[in-house]
Length: 327
Image (cartoon, rainbow, N blue to C red; front, side, top):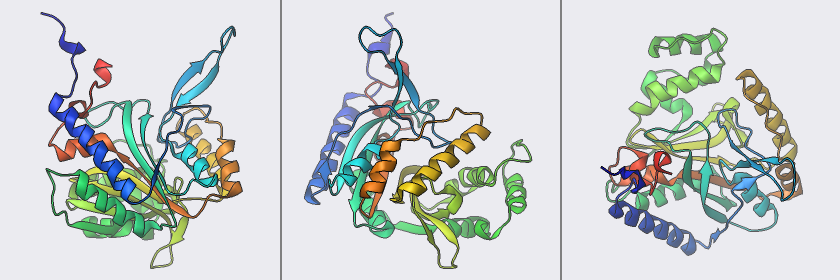
């Protein structure tokens, strides 16, 4: 019998559905006068986020003995912010993204990100726009979604009866050990315990459609900091979940070049603690921020997960023309 792995992992009905979603996305942003852009997939710099591993690629110039290390982009964020600094206005992109080590039922090393930036938007306005787009894209499986908007503290209070922003590191560790059966070193960082509580306790118990916002300041990534109703420092970012599945990650964007450079350094400190190689800071992004990126909010959304939810698929391979095992 011939090996069938030459065949697509998604059926033709799913491929047509994917094309329809892409058309809906483009119509959605055209109506809002948001410009579609295209940025490089191959870059001189990888992402510094301690929890994301870039895929390295060697470029060897013709006639050269050795090459230069470049990276397949895990997100078009850095390049899109450079466009914002150049005066692009509101922009979006349907981009191929790559992440090392991510393969499984919901992950593929190569996937599709829908990423957009809205000049003049704050976090609330962007969350409402994300909800509006998801109401369109999640059909036919979901209709008339009732969206919930919970702070990070709300989620823990509603599900576990505690507020992690008011708890010290030891209390967080003890709480995690009560709920998660896992062997971890005693010096495990606070945010790792919080991530375990989020994945094991919070996410499975969230309402059907839920935005979580105002994360701990230590989890700010590329979001700016703000204060919550209790006057505590928080990261002005959100994640959105449908049926317990994370679909998007959005920020009220950090636009301070000096602070961005400091965060690159902090990322590499954390990478060293995790035994990961340092990633050179992308000075072009820092320079763009110092030149002036307008006040904006941005979000990245995984297209394949949306397709999985909208069409009741259980594995990402079912919505890709060729998943990693067949590429």
